[in-house]
Length: 317
Length: 319
Image (cartoon, rainbow over all chains, first blue to last red; front, side, top):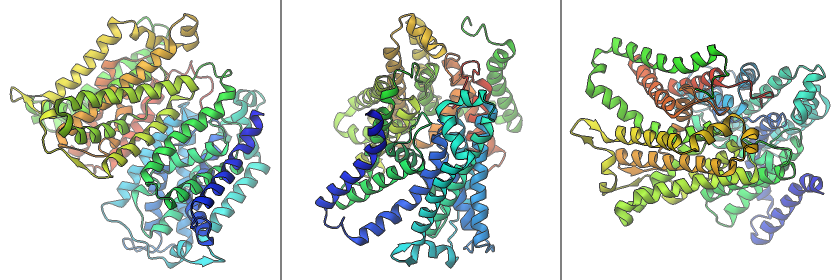
């Protein structure tokens, strides 16, 4: 029973939310609002995919804010912009995704190699990323002038921006990786019982680093998307997104203790948060109050998912 | 040192001697670069700039000694600054105790949620961090709240005898009071026992839940006091006033040699750690390094110090 609630509960909550807002706000049930919803959720979806890969290991990744800051500045300096003479276009975007992956790899290597808890290493890496972003910023905000990149957020195709399609493609790819590759399967297994996997002769460390790297790549891509939306590179590009992504994943049913959930679950969580944000704005609630609600939601969602396990968790630090 | 006796000697030596040595080496290096630094006036100014950070890290050290962590302290200090600035006109002198008590309560609530729902402390306090900063934004309307009449906080930003900054005395007093509390009452031994071996402490009949809630309440209280110190020197409260102090505070705790696995550590270590962090910051600007690199330094410092001080015998699986 508890298992069923954890599997289908989030989806039911999403439907209920949609129904409530559809009744309360006539504006909510328009096609234009659906477009807004999906466009608004695109960046969060990509960040959450990254966070999910780390969460199913049983680790946590707080580095998104810093990594995204560094990547947002990097991409805005690599494509055609107001500060440097570079105009790398798609190559620049690829380089930035690689930069994100490098940050993720650093988190993974530090966690696995030094045996330091991941919340600590990723907090450190986030600070490093913010520092790199501030150094690159150097007091002058770079404005992106590359029409190809700006088109990602402005041009529409069949009613949706390219960012939405990009997010959907990333979700599909991430789902396939999780379902059909060794990395995806082992990541879930590591979260379920790392010691057993280690005893079976599987090189756990390698897969952990790979999962962190993948997460970093997602943050890099999300930073590119946000820069396309804003039209300039800012240090705070990822502010608050680490936490929003973890909230989305946990609310969707990806377990903080690892081993349960996955991309599909987390995406339900992303939709819940996005619908909640959109609906609350439409019925006139302050965005700051929403942040407060988010802080409470994540604690309760974690509490609810850990409740059935509480006898297994003798010591909680 | 009974608690630490079983540790490998080399590690104990590193953990005990390194922070003090690092502090002295940094001080010597800075003094060599600018001889004026060792004069009483500049040393006191340096100590004054370290005071809010020291107070912020003081209570959080006790949570770390329990084996948990409090990531909400900086956001709570920011909230405290906003509340103090908006309440001072009405409550006058009572505003400071009211804010500090409220922050201690906020800390206690986090502790309660942590023990009652068995949610890892970093998740609870991460949620708390979001909640407190959102409340600060709501209460202030996302703007700086000026405090036209600064009498309620003047005591925290004066120089006694025209020389000694009162904030330094507040910081040292907070440290001394907490250290005395840990030493005179059983709390110190309880906290270390919980951090060192919680199952054993539970079997020995220690009131684990109460100990943890007290630790979080103390952490919240000192966060509130740190917010008061910041209001005293900026004459205003702001919803993100203290946010940038989270990483330096964590750095001060771990650089001092307190292990985040709990059990090993002490308050004086955080004092040394805060000194190291402050000297490094000052040293960087002396060396002409752009302030933008500060954040990178904190990141490296935190990860490096945790890697050096963590007790790996306690964690078979590192999550």
